[in-house]
Image 1 (cartoon, rainbow, N blue to C red):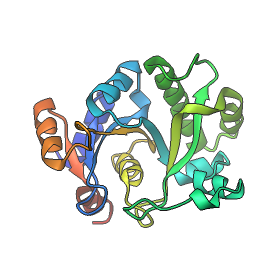
Image 2: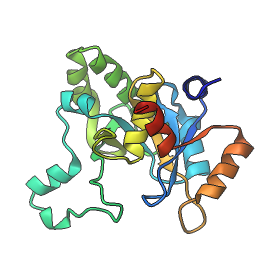
Image 3: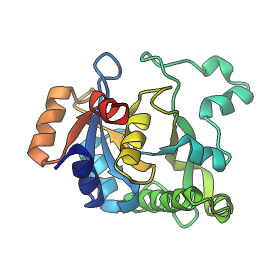
Length: 219
């Protein structure tokens, strides 16, 4: 089984894929699920086995159709430009907006976050088909601020973070640009690469690196 088949089969079966970015960048591993199969148990897995902020990510074209802007631009326009600084690894953040679906209660439970993410995925599926009703659905069915951060890929030519890597990987294997991820944490710090590989072997789930993804996206 080649990489494309392995990743697609893993995601479609409801299991996560681990992605390590690059040495010299964040040097972090994220646990990533395909949003098309998300449920509350997978959110629980992200909380218990990853531990970082649970995020939803899609493509920039998709968020542009929804009229969304990067949070840095929103903050700048609101007069908070002094707070806008780049992280140590140098890239602008990929965050756009935090939302809840209107059917949720507090929005933070595993069930609520799974509901919000599942509904976001359905919007992206419809947006991808140029369905204008999806835009109306987004503004009618979601509210902000909420508990699910929406991130948008800037494209691997512009940024090489986990947002771009995971969205590019989904597109490469033939799935919608719609993923859910959380950084894997250790005691007091991020999980290092050696422990991430060990986790991958023990759990029987694939781990790919940013280098692996670049090699298949830009062969």
